[in-house]
Image (cartoon, rainbow, N blue to C red; front, top):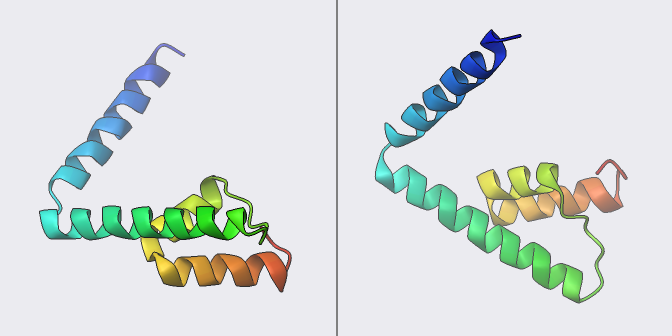
Length: 82
């Protein structure tokens, strides 16, 4: 069990280095998508739409932006998945 923190640290370091090696334009696009999608989810919840904001919906919306909000809404209301 002494190696578990070391392995987790190596994995986190690998992920951080992988993110830093990405082009800055791609990182900014991801951040803008995440921000816009999060704001849209928040505004929809203010109007009583009832989309649950958890790590799954945040991940989908973060990667896809507005299309992610549409996908989450479809999964929530039509398929009752999330």
